[in-house]
Image (tube, rainbow, N blue to C red; front, side, top):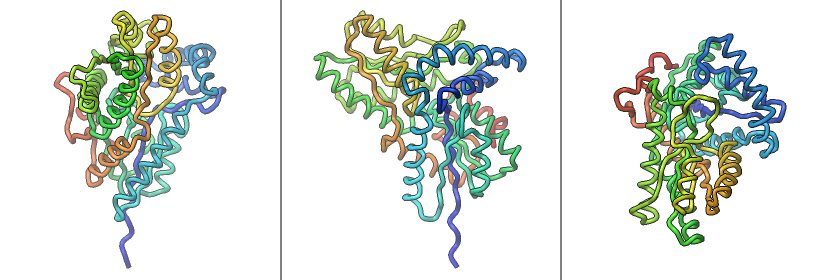
Length: 362
């Protein structure tokens, strides 16, 4: 009698998005109710979440999702990644049975549903893989907190390895650089000029970073390493690039420079723009609407007509292989670690995931 294959559950964690118009408001409510997003006491946070979700579902968010048929493509795109990763992992090793689950933070399938499915699968080992290359308290930590709460509630007690961040993972960097290089060469050929590459990440309020969140530092590290790889692929030793931050909302001061400011500078310098949303790993409203439509229109108003958007890493083979490599490296391991198996963040980032591992460990 042969031994049964070891069962491995891999959980891809992502933001989530509304699946129809009437769910835009509850999705936004879930988002703004997150204490990692709004740190006010519960009664105040509830009132704010109710007010903001009501307002934004009718205006900004409602308008944005209407461009996409009143729904987000995030679940569909994440599911494609999950399917490819599951095939990749099962092709690598016949001694394990891999099943990849998708768990969303603010809309279905959320942690409670996914934990129940994982429990029914009854794995021997679990690997948690957030689809955020750069760690932030507002994304990865939030997802891990909810997962930890749910497994305790449902009694899912299995050896678990968590990959907290991978801002310079080889597969992620190569896939990003490959996408940038292709668009860069197209822009150069069509305009006759050397473009400027803008690495546009989702912004955060400055107070979050000052509170010890390593997100901005990790985004800068990713941008630098992608730029170095693009230099190799294009032969442009003096590649023109900069990092910027999009999606500002509310009255707080946010990290910068903003993507709007970066576009304004490019217009002034009369250079084409190639823009990569390097903190996103699949297309959704921030890439397909905010960048492709809103920033493109803004660029045209600035007389910056040479505007090129680069696709996210999505299902690029190098990215999927990179995810697979990270999972394989943690099959006999537990706890929270970066893909480098050590803390990546310099001293001073008090909200580094690995320094808080006791609080977050599943």
